[in-house]
Image (tube, rainbow, N blue to C red):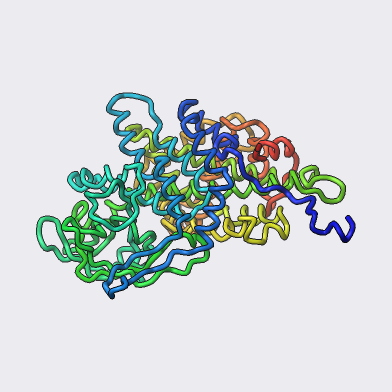
Length: 554
């Protein structure tokens, strides 16, 4: 190229846009077909097409470029405690709600169970959530909390009758107005406080009864996302102990509830989403469930948000490997495209296996939600959710960092979207319980609910005999569990090691049973026999086939 041609750009990968994020993801499509059938997959085609458009990507960029702003007062000096968002945030939220990713699956699932039909509402929603998250992850936080609020709301029939239809609406109706006048509503959650964090039993916010299940709250919340949502589930100390409450932003009278938004958090990532510190001074709330049973009531919401943490991390992995595989397929160096280089094939194949394992496990958990009356599925969900939350979310940052590196310097600039993915990648391992909290929750489940270990053994046993490496890993994990159970201190010390092994075997079981041979082979060889410590250290396997499977087709 001559000096006069310096503005003619060559050898740059085109933008990855115009593809279908659902049907172009072979692993996701296969999981939907396996758990829900062709009709459900067909219902997601329009969502996948919209998620892959340049328009959706641009709205995701703008929502993160222009952060939410706290508006504590109106022009006249009235305290309003509102948050202003860029129009692109509202564009994304409107589509997410419209695609049924909020609480709609709960009402649809109840209807189909009553009619004895075979609708797979939660599998459909999970696949849509995983795909739509790839447009921009931050706005899925209020969507997730709205979805997760419904199981907890069932602790009070009257509150559920009032709020579930609003949360299940597929109409996005932003703004603080009387709930009965709105076409749809969104929910949030406030659990942690300054002094306690995850140890919510240290909460000091007080709840004083004023009659008929109504209380006044005095205290604070340290980390509450989406303060513009219409209603929140919060924990506070009542006379009988820690209790769950429903806290609306607007009271039935039309007045604003006393809820002070102190400030918005300046976060590492997730910057399109507003996360706030709140203070309560005589704030009206309605008791949800029995006094003193707050954790038991709200834990159903936590379980559902943990599923979304796994789905969100799987989405980050998928977007990262899609961008990386697309780039190396179109970028040339040293006489050939990067995708033709054996070492790059090794890296991309390794990333692809990680992504497919995450997607496969996440969708299996969603299928369990669709079968609430099945004892095995309930027990499996109880132990597999914290396992997956620990393992999938914990592995996401390293995986996204490696994918970013595949783009070289191009991946280190904001326009590539890779920095956004990297900043987001640690989040899901922190929210809804950090790695230690989830690893210990696995032990708690095993010790207190004997059926959950049986469910895990049954699930991993489905693949026994198909791969010797897998069989040896199952035996080793059971031996580790038995050895660790001899001492409470040793059991806790081994919590992460056990959780990682158990989660990996769940992934391996699914891939050995349902995945293509080349993916299952590489997974068993690299994840069950000792991984090299970083990506791109695979020893054998059909790496080219795995790389091609992961590369988006436009």
